[in-house]
Length: 153
Image (cartoon, rainbow, N blue to C red; front, side, top):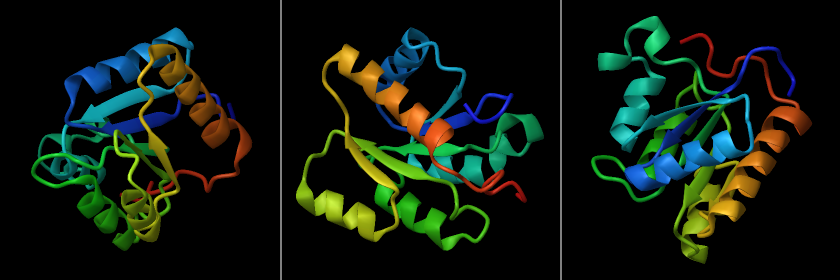
């Protein structure tokens, strides 16, 4: 990967099993990235804007990538993505829609809102491991990203 320190991946997903499976996939492929999780779009925005329990500096390390579920309570992924892209300090953080949906309507809507990628969650664990390894290699080993996206917050 491009830097000496691990990148932070922020996963917003209301399904505890999905969060655990992604964590297990990170462990399985020995990824150096750090996975942080939130359970809904409201908590995602609190994390990104360092509000409430995320107000302590070390409680919300700036993510280098957001994995965003679309269907969550309180604030869904679409609303959260709209807010992220409208915020001048957050808009450069890459956002990957990572969802069970395979709907073309969702794909088009998410790209129109400014997502960087849309990935349907794999069903099989070995496929999930492959997707996570590929995502991390792509976002942190291949593409050129701005330094510290959203770091001024």
